[in-house]
Image (tube, rainbow, N blue to C red; front, side):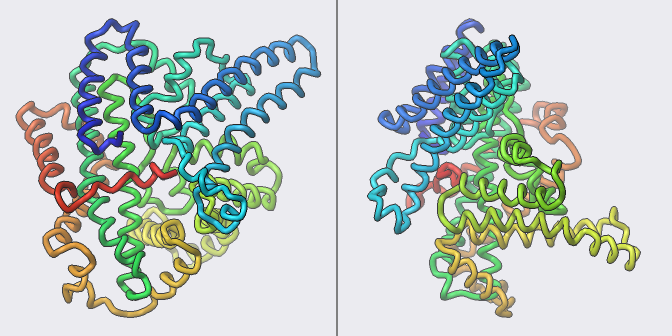
Length: 489
C-alpha cells in the first residue's frame, strides 16, 4: 500500500477517524493494529523479517540492560558479554539487510552463488527499520535510556506506518512517548498536517513523476544525447530525487501530525548548501546523524588526527553507499561524497588565500550564490553515478556534457524527450514554484503564517494547492505513478 494510492487514503481516513473516537489510552493499540495491517498489505510472507528484527532487538536490549546492571555492580566480566550480545544483534540484522541487498544487485557473483532467488525477499522498509533498531540497541548499550519492557509498544515504535516506508529514521527517546501517550484532537495541528501532505503530493505527482519521464529517456538512451541533454539529465534527476524523497517524507510527517505525532524533519533545503559538508547537514538528516553517531564517532571521529579523520570520513560514506545498494555505482557515489569533504578540508588554506587575495566578502550574496552553484554541480555529478546502471555509463554521460549545444533549450528539442510542450511548461512552472516556496521557507514558517490568516484566505490557498495536485498530477490513463525512489532502499 503506497502513499499515492486511493487505498492508502481510504485506509488513513478510517485510521484517523477511529483514532480520535476511541479513548486516549487505547490509541496506541489502534495505531499498532493499523501499522500491522499496513505492513501486511505489502507482503504477509515477508513480514517474518521485520518480526525477527523486532523480537531479536527487543530481547537483546533487555539482556543488555541486565548486563549493564551487572557491570555497574562491579562484575567487570559482564562487559565482554555486553559486547557479544550487541555484536550478535548488529551482525544478524545488518547481515540480513546486506545479504538481501546483495542478492538484489544482480552481479556475476550473485549468479555464481545462486542468490538470485533472494532478490524477491526484500521487505518493505528494511533499510530504515534496521538502522532504527540498531540505534535503539546501541543507545541501551550506552546507557542512554532503559530498555522498553512492553513488547507491543516497542513493536509500534518499529512498525509505525507513516515512517516505515522511507523514514525519517526515528530515535526511540524521540518517538516512543509520543506514540503511547494519547492525543486529543487539535484542529490547528490536523489542518497543518493536511497542508504538509498536500505539499508532499505536489512534489511527488506534479514534479517528480513528470521529471522522471525525461530522466528515464535520457539515462536510458544516453548514447544518443550529449551536451545540454546530459546536463539536463543530471539537473532533472537531482530535482526528481529530492522532490520524490522529500515528497514522501512530507506525506509521512503530515499524516503523523494529523495523528498528533511529530516526526523529525528530514530535509532542510539541501540544494541551498554552500559546501558538501553543509549538504549532508541538510539532506536525509536522520541518516546523516545516524551515520555520525553510530559509524563516524565510533570509528574515532576527528579525535585521532587529520589522517584518521579523513579515513573515517571515507569509511562512513562508503557505508552510506552500501546502505543504498550493493552495486559499484553506489559505492562510487558514497566515495565521491567522502572525497569531496576530504579535498574540501585539504584545500581550505588555498581557498582562504584566494579569498584574502581577492578581498572577497564571504557573507556577500554573490559569494554564497557561487558556492551554492558549485556545491549543487558537485552533488549533481555524484547523483549521475547514483542513477546510472554502471560506472562506465556515468563516466560517459559526464564526458558527453562537454559538447556545446545550448540551442536545444529553445529549438523545441526538449519536447521530444517524452513530454509534450504543455507538460514541459507545467514542469518548469512547478519547479519554479518549488524554488519560490523553498526560499520563502528559509525566511518564515509558511504553515504558521497561514494559520494566522483569515479562514477564507487560508482555505483558498489550501484548495488551490489541492486542485493543483488533482489537475496537474501525473496519473490516470496512460500513466502509472512512479514508485517512491527511496522505497527501493
